[in-house]
Image (cartoon, rainbow over all chains, first blue to last red; front, side, top):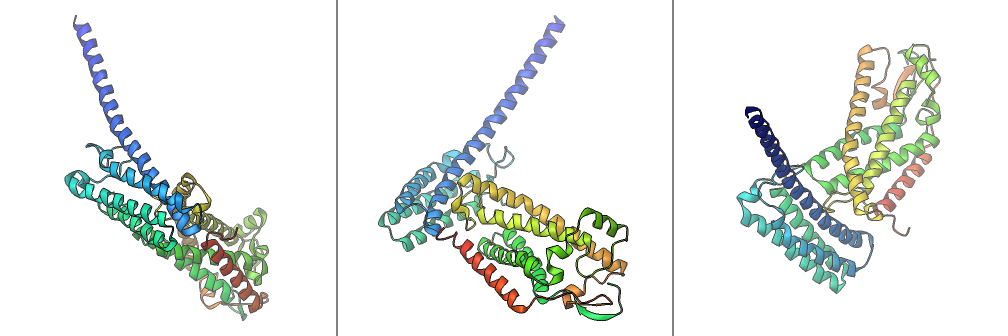
Amino acid sequence: MRKIGMALAAVAMAAGATGAAWAQSAAEKQVEARKANFKKIGAAMKTNVDFVRNDKGTAADVVAASRTMATLAGQIPSWFPAGTAVGVGKSEALPVIWQKPADFRAAAMKLQTAANNLATVAAGGDKAAIGAALGGVGATCKGCHDVFRQPD
Amino acid sequence: MAAGGTRVRVWDGWIRGFHWLLGSLVAVSWWTAEEGHMEWHFRSGIAIFVLLVFRLLWGVFGSETARFASFLKGPGTILAYLRGKAPRALGHNPLGGLSVLALLGVLIAQTTLGLFAQDEDGIYSGPLSSLISYDASSLAGEIHHTLFNVVLGLIVLHISAITYYVLRGDDDILLPMITGDTDTDLPAPKRAPAWRGLVALAFAVALAAWVWSGLKGL
């Protein structure tokens, strides 16, 4: 009986360890998913930069990419569940995100506002104005990263 | 290159200007990237592009000691030099020629990657990044970041080697890169006329301007 008890204990410990490993990988998966989402914002940014700087694509592409950006910006706070700060996988999310959630949400909303503005301006087709609006978007990216993301 | 003999011009002004500007701009590029002054990082990078294009042209059309054909040697000559059996000559020694090749090669790779690179956020991107995809540009950015360690390693090796020669004291290697001159009984190397330097520089600047525009018109 004692042997069986020990075997059961060993199985329980192994299951516990597996559970811990699984829990960890769940948080890591959230970090990976978050990074994939931010890359979508980055890809939309590239579409906009390519048009403004290199005449690649059309103003309509900028409208579409900016709308994508605005939609994603609205989701940003939901990409940061507790337990996904720096230290989990490749996370660069600083703890201040969860210490000042209102500030963090406000920073994400600034991107949404700037991206919506870019979509509106791009629909007008004035290249110089599009460039200025794009600069506004870039500033909100940088503004948030400077405070909430771990420096390189 | 032992002391004595007559004073000859071993490095022309083009090569010395290239050398010290390149060293300074690599330092500027490093600092601006570390501090996040990316607009200045791009300017520094395109200036390095000008220097590298000029150096490649000067390696073919320039003064004798600048020409690749004059200082790139095969393994046999390099081994002979290491055993102290190579004939005395002005300019890069056979081992130094390898160093020039490595430094130029890695800086050309680094600068080219920088032209195509972006950060993952797509905020800062090189002038040619619009020619390639988001993923390719991000990858170029990552390699650009990593390859700089190789650049730093080669620079450390370069400065160590110069320090070694200076401490050994029998090879006048440092001052000529500043003054251009060395005292020798060897014949003075041939110098390219100034107009060729101006043409090479003008070509390099024009090419850089076109690259900076994202190869407009291509």
